[in-house]
Image (cartoon, rainbow, N blue to C red; front, side, top):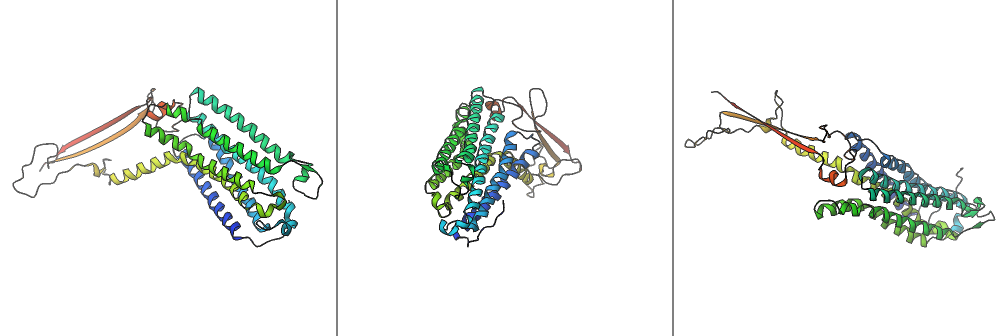
Length: 369
């Protein structure tokens, strides 16, 4: 597609929208990068949920690119001024709709594959598979309407072509409404399973809150639907400012919300290492940590009574603790994905199927004068 468009000064609101979405896309790329770093650093294997979210990233970037291409073509200006660019704008709109449909569905499928990876509850897994089928049917219908709503297809992007088109605005709104419905349906799938876990109510609410972060995307989707009601195809360039903005925000925000909970293991390891670094001191040749030596110096007061215990000034006390996690088969489980063991949710969260072994070794040596 050759771009021979007439350039217009970019309006401040259009610049602001583009800047916000640039930051959002960069943040989405960063979060997904950290997600994969967390997976690789833990030795976990990638699964379909990871691969699908990786596929969604370039689609979200593609929507930002189209928004950037539109910006100098007269977005925010009356269509009477931007008529020389209308064919290019409408061609990009076709691509924009297609990418939006595939990106949103890719994110939804990623979430549901995550459910299949984590949960082994038969009822939840069956419901998730039905939801996946519904999303794929919805996606197919969404893509078909992009190419079939006008006959001939050229009438979709060329107003000079005589043809017949359906109500495109109503189609956009209907697709957006189904989008919100599927979001809520997917987010509520694991709630009953999580609530049945044998754990405290605050812990259950915390897990549900993590799964419900996607509701932020549903709110944005509703705002996007409202912006679509203000869209006028007869004056497209002047009325598409907010619809264009929110349509780019929604999938990229979805990528962020889906990937953020996956960083929990990385955060735990970072905080654990930071806590360990505060306790660790320089090690001696024997490998013991000097910070773990419990020493008592000779008191300065002459009338102090020194007790004959292991903490005696003549004794050098050292200790070392080791913690290991083992499965029932005795194999160390500290090497990979927490979910690859196919535990039930209760076992996964409570560690019922694992044995935690803690070994503490004390060494007491008397220092001869």
